[in-house]
Image (cartoon, rainbow over all chains, first blue to last red; front, side, top):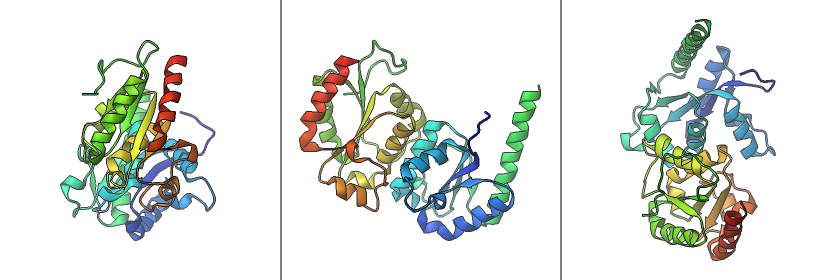
Length: 142
Length: 147
C-alpha cells in the first residue's frame, strides 16, 4: 500500500524494566536500516493516545517482547490487543525465564524468538523480515 | 447466560445494538447485573466469562464479538487493574474505533488518570461513575431507538 505518511518497519512493545536490553536492540535494528517505533519517540506534551495509534497503524510489523514482567503490564496488554485488532504480523521475543502461564495466549500460539543477545536477535529479525519481503515480491511476480 | 446468539453473523441494521462488556473475574456479579440493565434498555450484551489472562481464543472469539459490537463498556475497579486481559479488549476496541465507556467503581477519574498501572488512555468524557449508570442507560436507550 503506497502512503505519503511515514512508515515504520517495526512497532516495538516492551516493558520499562527492560530498558537497557531494549536500547541495545533498537540500536542494532537501526544500524541494519530498520525504522523502529517505540515509546521513546513520543515527545513530552504530545498526546500519548494519538501517537500510539499512529505508531501502530503506520508500522508494518509488531515485535512484542515477553518477560516475566509482561503478565502484570496493562500497557503491554493494551498494545497487544490493539496489534491483534489490526491483524499485523506479530513477532514475539520471549525471555526463557518467563513462566508459561504468564505468556499471553496469542503469543503462545505463535513461533517466537528466544530473548538472548540483543544484537543477535535484531539480526535474526532483519533476516526474517527480508525473506518475507522476498516471498511477497515473488508472489506479486507470479 | 448473557452470551449473544448468532455468533458468526455480520453486524447489520436488523441486529440488536450490541454492548461488549469487559470486566475482570472478580467483577463478574456486577457485570451480570449491568448486562441485565442494558438488556432491559433494548440492547444486546456480550459478556466475557471469567478469563484470567489473554486467552488463545482472543483472535477468534473476542475480536469477532468486537466486530459486531456498537460500543464497549469496561468496568474499571481496583481489581481490574491487576487483570491485563481487560486492557487487551480495550486496546482492540480502540483500534477498531468502537466507542469506549469506562464505568468506575471504587476509583475516581483523577485516580484512574494518574494511576501508574493504568494506561494514560481514557479521555474524561469516557468516564462514568457507577452511581451515574442510570444516565448512561437512558442515553443508551436513545442510541438504540435512534439508529
